[in-house]
Length: 130
Image (cartoon, rainbow, N blue to C red; front, side):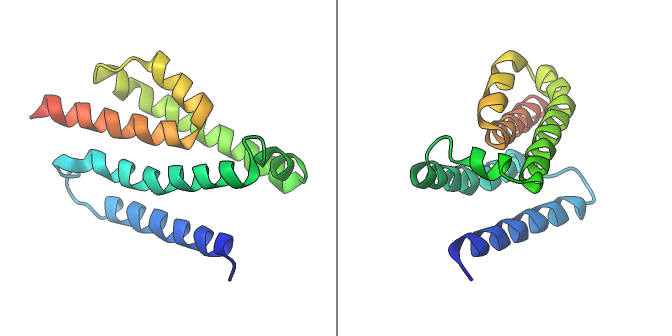
């Protein structure tokens, strides 16, 4: 098993465990809930840094644009991030965050910016509720 296959499997396992833990919670996730998206995004951000160092900043384009599957994954990513941002922005605004700043973070970093926005939103929500 190559290191990329291992990383893909590990990422799947971490995401599945995080989603299962959250869905099995009967009540609202406890006070440090903002740590959940932060813990998920940190390894992803590190892996993104490794990919940029190894492949270059534009290294993803030959992979994404070289096949129909690559393009399908690109469109899926764009749709998922746009849907998640759409669903999160009202909560972020209600928590006192400026969505203009966060839309730029999400546009330029994708899921990394989205998860940081989620962590910040949950932090503000819990801070004002306490």
